[in-house]
Image 1 (spheres, one colour):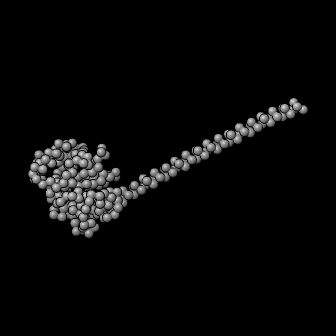
Image 2: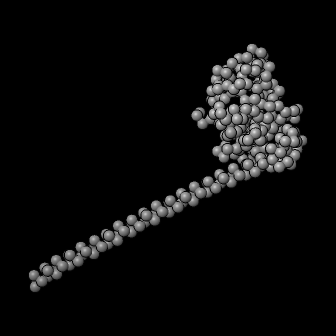
Image 3: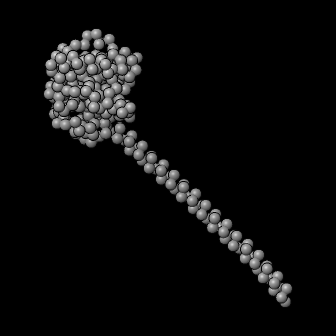
Length: 262
């Protein structure tokens, strides 16, 4: 009796051990599946969120570009594109542009680039950072003259700011001028104001921080003008052949965009 009972107890002990091990295996397997499911759900959520962000960014770029395409059509009098406008002359319909935005002061274009935009001057330098020419909100903003400029494009120097957009729009093309070969292929831009048009000869490429004296406006005395020209020459990464004719009698236009070195 005692022996058999002892054997049964022993057998019972072994059976109990097998059952506990099975439960542990099930629990471990369940936790593993739960963690795997959680990781999958997390990855799917990340993919969905990333897709939303990319899609949203693409849509915003498209919206801003479409807005400026429409504005260009208006500026060029309904002509199909900037090339056709150039063939027919440099005229810009400033009357139509003023109806959209009375802050317009000029139009700038550069052949074989996306630069074909209006330039405005606001009451401060923050207004057009994220406001499109038509007044709608947009990351591309609008090209704008430094607000403190007294006589844009008529005085000795005029500073124009524009975003460096990742889709290549606005002033993103300016970074290409770091390559002198690109500059030689695009040596000029066209600037049109309500009073007339002129060709902008590319004179120098600079990579300057935001607090540089290059961004000084309203320079009037001959001495200050000469000092400014010397500053450009000493700060430039390179100068073009246009440097030979630069003097204090010229009118300078500084086109500025973001440089990610700073």
